[in-house]
Structures are given as structure tokens and as C-alpha cells.
Length: 179
Image (cartoon, rainbow, N blue to C red; front, side, top):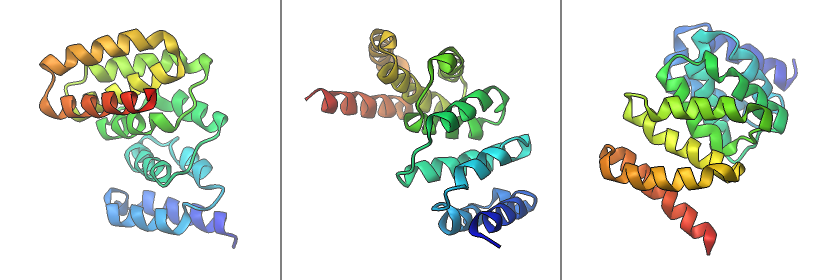
């Protein structure tokens, strides 16, 4: 059995069991298979089942945090999936992944809609990372830059402290890039 087949077998076994909620089981998968060329495709294929969204988006987030990148088609496919993400954790993970996505023009408005919904979410973690989504949009599509800057400044006045901290990190990173 090749590595991709084994990765698929183990991924499905974990997702079909109670272990899908176990960070330890998911980390084992990441450690064992994240270097497989087929890993992002296996994750995407597993995302077709809504019961897997939280686990699979978490695995994607960890994979991207390891320095991996999605190609343009993979980014587009993940973005097209976002309207189906109903669990707040899955939405949070995708927002955390957005800086690693190349957003095609054809999915700009879908991504914008997702980010705007997340900016109004009652969950402060989702809101905090929605600002990252807005920042990602502004970096890839200049027409969002003025709105991003204005919204960042306004939100520093009235958002929850954890959200303000995220915005300050984004502003600091923005200033570091302008030097």
C-alpha cells in the first residue's frame, strides 16, 4: 500500500470514529502524512461530509501552519466550500487559513460575504479572525484597503479585548511590510 492510500485509510478511520474530536489523533495524522503530496486533496475530499468539517479544517490549518501552500485550484475549491461550513470552529479554521489562500477574482465576492458575516458573528474568536480575512482581501484586492484601515481603527474603540489584540497584530504586520 502506498503512502497516499495509507493516509486515506487512516484519515477515514479517524474521521469515522469518535477520535475525530481528539487533537491527539488528528496530530498523529498530521505528523504521519502531512508531507504526502496527496494530503491537501485527501482533506478536501473528506470535507464533502459536513460531519468532518471541524476536524478537516483543523488539519488544513495545521498543514498550512507548517509552511505548506495550496495551489490556486485547491484554494478555489476550499473557498467554494465555505458556505457549507456551519460549525463555528470550521469557520474559524478557514478564516485562520485565509492568508494561505490565493483568492481568485471569481470567488472574491463569496469570500467577502463570508468575511462580512464573520465580522458580525457573536463568537469573538470568529470575529477576531474575520479581521484577518478582511486583511487578506485587502492584500489581494486593493479596493478593500481603505475600508480595512477604517474598520481596524473603528474596531479598536469598541471590540472585545481579544479582538482588539488581533487587530493590533494585523496593524503591526502591515506597518512592518511598509518599511
